[in-house]
Length: 163
Image 1 (cartoon, rainbow, N blue to C red):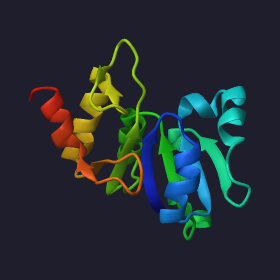
Image 2 (image 1 turned 90 degrees about the vertical axis):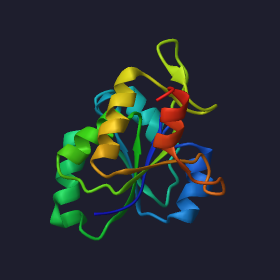
Image 3 (image 1 turned 180 degrees about the vertical axis):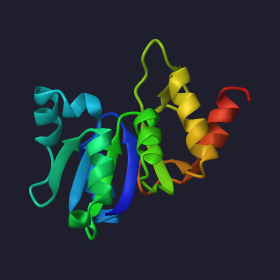
Image 4 (image 1 turned 180 degrees about the horizontal axis):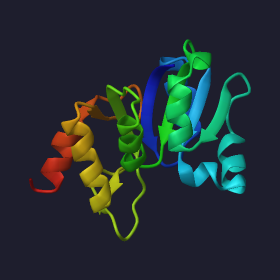
């Protein structure tokens, strides 16, 4: 499988993904990689209902994504992977999926999170996962839209956390 874009955006499939990222990185498949979404039929139906009709969309568990990535059946498939959090990406990388770069697009604010940018808020577990991904050599790019300037997410994260 050729992963054209791996993106954290807890809104998953929405206007920016459909109108901007898919044009920049054309794909045949949009895959939401989330155990929570894959195991919740209502949420899965809602998330996938907005996918464009010309792109196959699915929601799968982290383990199923790792199997699909390694399957000869999907060898030539061009895919965009969408994630809710960095912990799922870390699990996927540890299961042998070779991700070189992750786009950090949006993680909503909640009371147990620290706001890093206007679009990204993190929990301590997120920070730990981002650090481990970075240590594993995964480039973490902060950019909401393709036309925005690419920013080193780890520099931003460390600055905002005072580290």
